[in-house]
Length: 72
Picture 1: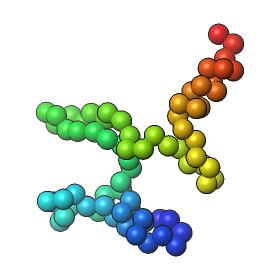
Picture 2: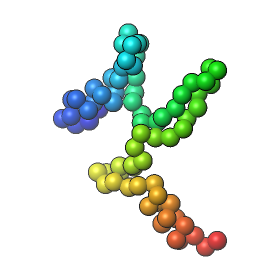
Picture 3: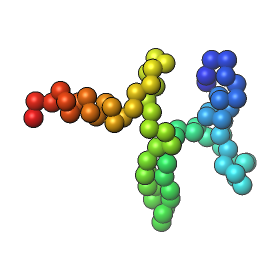
Picture 4: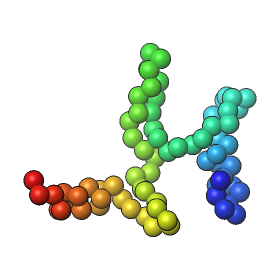
């Protein structure tokens, strides 16, 4: 969980699905997807943000840095 953040901990680590509260709890990962014909399709993320040691990194910035340093 999150240190001294009880509400955020419950929201992310003890999530329930509306209409199916008896199921779970679930881990809210931020991945977006859907089920179709018993197959799971991942189609994105809720937030495009990577947090490392309290610092925010955006995927497009990481990609631009990698492209700028590439020798190809």
